Image (cartoon, rainbow, N blue to C red; front, side, top):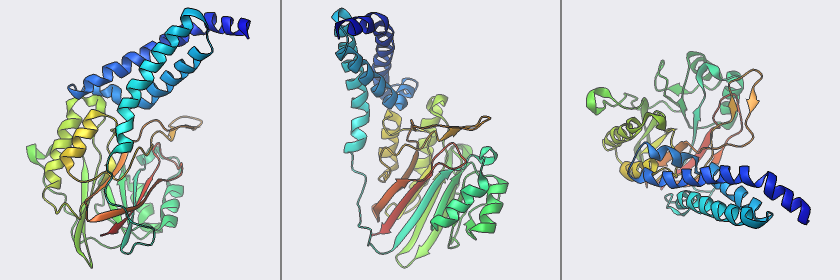
Length: 323
């Protein structure tokens, strides 16, 4: 074992050390996301930093000499800082829960269908029809997708031409898009209000921009929070592709600002595949960026990820029950 460990230490140890040091530096820089929207971009990739840190630590355990000491130190440092970003997501309160037998359930699917880049729109719509959801919040909709939904599901769209659309099995009481402050600035959104035996409840779908846009995403979050305050909070449901991971400081701040529990917990939804020829499936999703929120008038029965379809996102399936 001595010679293989020596060769590993001398040949592979230094490049692994460099990679581990870069990731450890990234996790350290990510901590500046507490005060800087630009540095917060690094927090979204915390699982990558964690994986590299653990790999660096493992390499150190089989190395020798000074390489061993540095690999272990750098690996521990990077993994610990990355874990500090990720662990709070698993410890937070995700709202009230209910058993599978709970009455008055609502099944919601949140899905970025990827517009015309979706390689299998017909298969996507067929899968939605088999799920028999009550509501589907769709991001990056297209005219062809909306036509297929009308033909094969019979669901009612909140808008016949919008990129963000809410499809429902029961027609909404109203689906007027609420006016937003700041001269109608903010992320694209859709709204539908329904009425059941417990009264009215509102569902809002949204699609904020990428975190690479700096403070723009944070501004969209503040505008969204102002919109949500116009509706009863207990019965409110919010879903969408937020382009934001739960270990980012901006997502945590926005969670507090929105004021209703986020029911998805570290549910990795992107990427599912690349838009290339031939189509390249991605075996591991890196970012949980599709989220579902619901006021305390709803209990979570189940939240799960759907299968890989024709889009670059996985669908999110949330089953909620009226409390």
